[in-house]
Image (tube, rainbow, N blue to C red):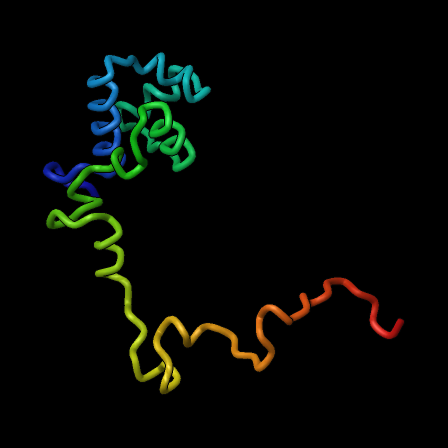
Amino acid sequence: METATRAHLRHLVAEEIGAHLGRRRMSGAKLARAIERSEMYVSRRLRGETAFDLDDLERIAEVLGVTVTDLLPADKVRPNSRSADQAVRATSPARPAASRPKGRSAAESTRPTSSVPASRRRPTPINRPVGR
C-alpha cells in the first residue's frame, strides 16, 4: 500500500530515467523512437503511471550509455552505499559449512569427481539408440 510519503518504485525509476534524459538533452519522443515504442507508451511510463518492463530498461540503458542499475534509484540498489552485488550477497543465505562434505572447500564440493583425467573422458552421447 502506497502512502503519501513513500513513492512506488516505478515513480523512482521514471525520475532516474528522466534525469538521464535531461543530462543528455534527449526528449521522451526521441527515446521512444530509439527503443521502438510509441510516444504514449514512453510518456505514461516516464510519468510513473505504468512501470517499465525489464526489456525496456535494458534498451533504455543501452540508448543512454549506462547500466540498468544506473536507472534504478540509488537507495533501492545500494542501501548504505553498498553496490548491488554486495547487497545481494549480504541478503543471500550462505550455505553452512556443516552441510559441505568434509575435506573439501565450498568450490570443490560441487565439482564431479572421476578417476579418469578430464583430457581422456569421452563426451556423453545424446539420443543414441540403445542396443544397436
